[in-house]
Length: 260
Image 1: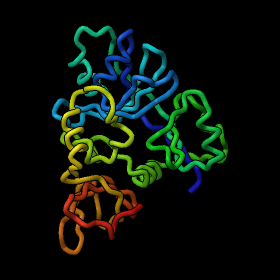
Image 2: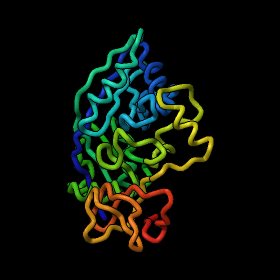
Image 3: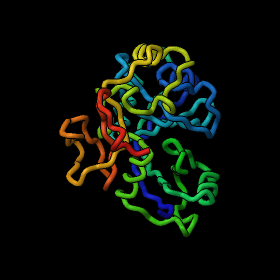
Image 4: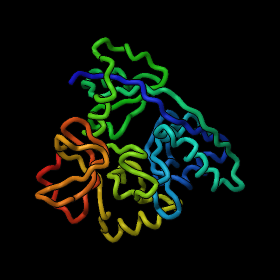
């Protein structure tokens, strides 16, 4: 597949003020204490119970200015959750929205050119040269075509990247999502929800179900059951043509239908 781009609307939460970095680091599951200006990092924002509020990408604009972008519909939810813990903290939390150009399936050469542009940032895990950018002319490379939402969803499933209200919800826990490697720090100080995350990690406890990339049956739809050898082993969360993301039970042997 040739490289493509798509306009994606995302919610943004801006946190500004002299305590912005300290405050965000005390609330997020990932460590942003050393995040340099211009850099970005993904993090989960959790409730004290360890359940997920949202998945955010934190971008450092200045030493006292941060932008968190998240899936559409979760900006206010994220801001409300942050503000609930903003006690005697000198920073302001505001919300808005922004159009991001999502570049996917890039060649190595295309990736170098796009990623070097101002306000370009790594998207997802970056393993397949995924880049998001704000305020960038998408025609910067004539070989990069305008894609479709189906193209985007196929790339997202291949990357095993979950979306809020789809592959994970407010009832999900971090270990279900497959995101702890990129959105959680196990060496930072305390944050709300840390107890559950640390307890499951230290005990080597697997979640009752976890997100997997699998082959989809012809009749598969989001929310329908995944069956193997006549047994229900999970639920589809996103279906993209012949592949899908699905929450698979811990007890199930799904190796015969998993991809990658």
